[in-house]
Image (tube, rainbow, N blue to C red; front, side, top):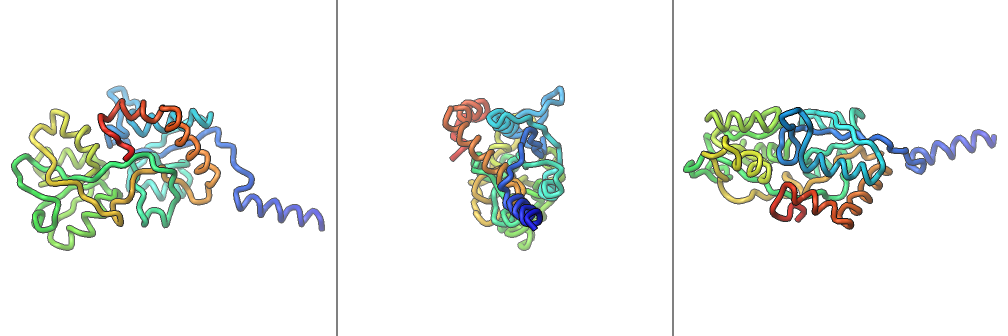
Length: 257
């Protein structure tokens, strides 16, 4: 009888996370098509702000970081299927996503903006974009926004597997505009040779419901121990100056706020 009682207690504790897993290896899912947050160098190495942050978090936790490449629109299903332990790939925290997964403390905040050819005189509104083709990356908050507010009013929203493909078709003229993270668009496209004929079209686009409230690490809801450990590590990175040092490698402004 005592044996059964002890077993029941053990099972109950396990189900509540009282026995925390020893996270010696943390696997992060990443879509490396979103410079300066995550991309690949000429030699195929993963680079970017998210990569640096993940590595710093693992260092604080004395864990080994492993990176698993995955298309962005399949990140949440792959996380739930335990292909990796967290999504560290510029994933905005939204109400819809929070119904499926948990999130770490905020990593940074970056607005959404539209890019178009210079002189196109387009604005990020359904009225201005009616009859136009706007490219978005599949699974992003920008896709959700565009399909919610623009597509029903006559705008053709074209989803792509990754952001590089969006920019290729924008450059070639197959798209009238692209809608994405503003920092990615600026540093990863407008400040490069292929973006010389393009510019931001209109102001930041804001909508808490579809675009979220900043970027966090996506985690399985049951991994409370991992979320707690990651949040402590993020706090430590801010406290000891590591976060600011890493951010200054990529940004000339306050990416956190």
